[in-house]
Image (cartoon, rainbow, N blue to C red; front, side, top):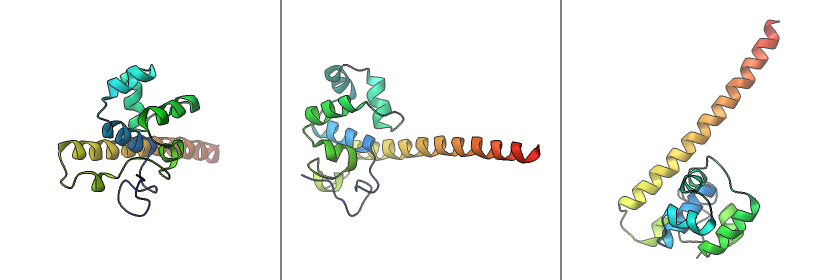
Length: 132
């Protein structure tokens, strides 16, 4: 199955690495702890990857793709062999789907917060230079 690349929050344009990682893990019925144990990393590390707060090294990404039965390209970009978008999986949204969406939004907000912080630092530097 391939991810929807045209519409929806799970599309290649909007889904993040963390979204795809969480979706593939959940499609196999694995917990974050299960995946962490199999991969040899802490559960917190898996959480940070799924929340897009940190990124795994290249060798870990390859291992993840193999463990989750998805293509490396899908895990990185959303294109290729992966898991079905949530809309195609089971028709009715359930608590788990809502939690996944909430996690996705939380990850996006955290990334935007970091971006705002970096922009603020740059702006302060520019303003400090202009003041001197």
